[in-house]
Image (cartoon, one colour):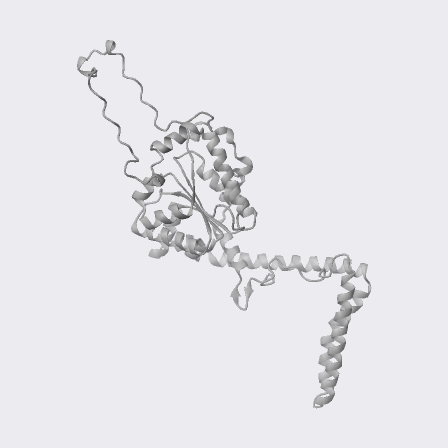
Length: 383
């Protein structure tokens, strides 16, 4: 959606909000007048004060003393009527503030602007228009916590490196040269974790294998599901996980979990931007080189840095360059500085991340994100 179209759409939203606010206030006013008839007379007198003040000024032109006395008496009466009104409203069953307008945004009173500056609610609406498409909305209707099916995941332990099938029976092997020497010792397998920090070990290493063999995929996914639910429940409260890094091989439900989180946070009225890594970095590249700008949302970079929740799906599938590394670090670092939450999903394991991204990026993720590892058979072949 082009900026001018989005702007017009947002202003129509504000017009609708103000009209709804006006009708709701009138409905409550009529109910209050029916309950307390004196209130209508008091409001009528208050409304007449502006006309009376203008009349006194015209009648006493040039006579500043008389004008001052008249306006002082009018001001005194105005204060008395306001006090009387407040006392009447205290008796109203709708509450003492029942005649006040109830705006969706009290800061700008549903105009979108505060002293010629765009209100935060305007920016939030612009982001939602630019980043929420009907396609994404359809996906979130299908992929959410309510439709999550734990039964898709295996109850059996998962071996990421199954042992190869045994060699054929030597008696049936016609080639004597292919027979193994019974005196020879098998070459030791290289340890993928040797010389590596255990916290950054490759998930295909021994430590990860032990976990996969001991904790079946279904039990592991239930734990990851609960972590994601907790993330949503604690969002905005300053407790629990602030950022999530969901990793594992393709076809294990990472994108589905991201969709679950996106819908749940959107339902809580927060601003969420959901992008795949290739799409995001393509748009940033277009901005850098000034091309295809009609498809790039305005304020793309700042939106990514300031939205309540940024979900970056499939990190590592983009074409990694010095520019993408720079963009990624800047976004992640700024969001950490502003204490904004981010969810990242990736097919890459920790060692692969270290090989592709700069140390600054990897350290930001490992040091500030809760790591959720998914494993098991590819779900795409089970449906």
